[in-house]
Length: 429
Image (cartoon, rainbow, N blue to C red; front, side, top):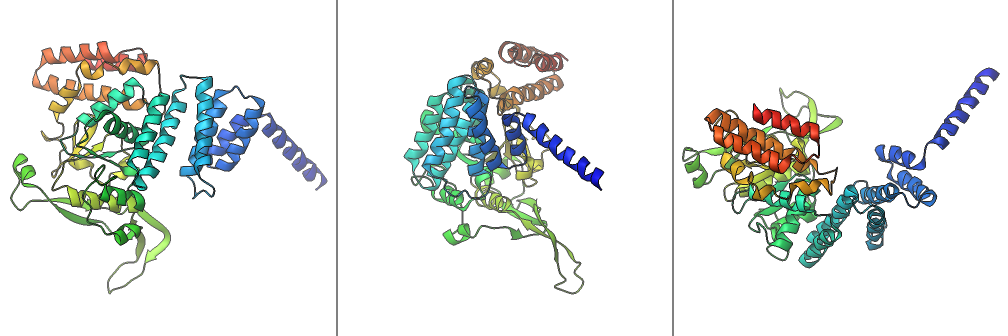
């Protein structure tokens, strides 16, 4: 027993000594991975006292403090002083490293979070203020503005565009509010449609008009948003005469969407309520999926609907079989598109892939934002490959050569040499 106690004591001392040898910054990152935000921030506050010129520590402070506000439980004491602390941390990181792309990204993310609050408070001027603040800081570089315009331009006129995350949401709203680009679109963030305040803003519009969609929900309906008891259920949605004409559909045709539940309550089962019913796990429709269903149901007959190709598949509620690829977005159609002539809108791809629309891509080398650069670095080549395959199958050799040259001249910039050469090889096939 004495030997065991001695061994245990030695192990405790060893672990403590090992922990003390790990830099505070690395300890903070490990705490963050476990979503222990308070612990991570305390460790960083100690680390920055030791090495105040380390831009990465200031960046982590801004990032982790941002996460504690928006991605944990409701935060007591979250106010404008707290917001300013986030901006101060990121400002310090950027002052130490002006090309710190991810610090600039989180600066725009914090601006976007404050714009979201302003949207829910029906304050359009404050929304504009925060997006200009992000732009003035340099958080919307040339390549991202170009990407945002190309992203929005793949949509039909007067469409509803569901964005996949804050990166595509923020650049779209900046372009609408400060460059008057594609103001006919209504931008709807998939990640926020489970929040009653945001749903109400979508129904009513900000300032009465901006960001407004049709939603047949009362205030009580919206404030009561919650998980709903649900089994897989077909929902039939009216289709406009224009869509029926475009796709040669019968006059009584309706879009059939089998809506599956996306939440399961562990340990809870549906008890037998009626003779012959089998006991089964209790499943629910999440608030996000319920609101997506409502938005599509209330608007599909009147407006085109597009989704960012970067949207989390879990958010799409099984709609992917009805998507038509338009480049950087997918258009929702009333019919399944796989292995049909409707799988791609190649005219949209051709319209996007021009020298004029890709003239600023090379600036990504000067201001890379690793957290979001992949939107451009990997999605553009995907479009090139799809259009090239179409040209190959159509026997359009001259167009294929021009497309390959366009990639060489505009996207082959040395950002990721191995990947770029792989794309060139695919195009040359």
